[in-house]
Length: 145
Image (tube, rainbow, N blue to C red; front, top):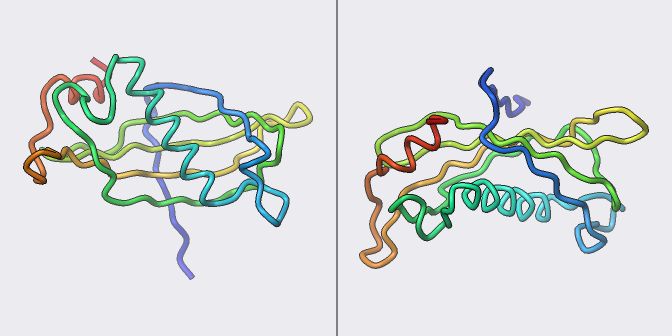
């Protein structure tokens, strides 16, 4: 079986945020549920946009919609862990871009990889329900300018 592989760029992340694992994030296996990790990635993405005074409905003139997600699980996260999430820019096209997430936690003075993920974000106009072009302001932020 082939495994998901995500290649991270060498540059500095767009943001590094810290999100605690709550009791409501824990599943019957007594670890972070896969559905909850997706919600945590959403929170991290919103924090990334907020640092630029953007939202998912107005990111430099673009609204955003998630087209796909890929998650490679590396380890378990537990209640009380604080997830360190680094977000990087992946591929950028004229209508979409990828965000790459490196998720880890520190436990017993050791950094533990929890997961790596990629979301493909598409520029979308919710009024006309169509994909739109990526505007220069958002593109510049994604490129670290």
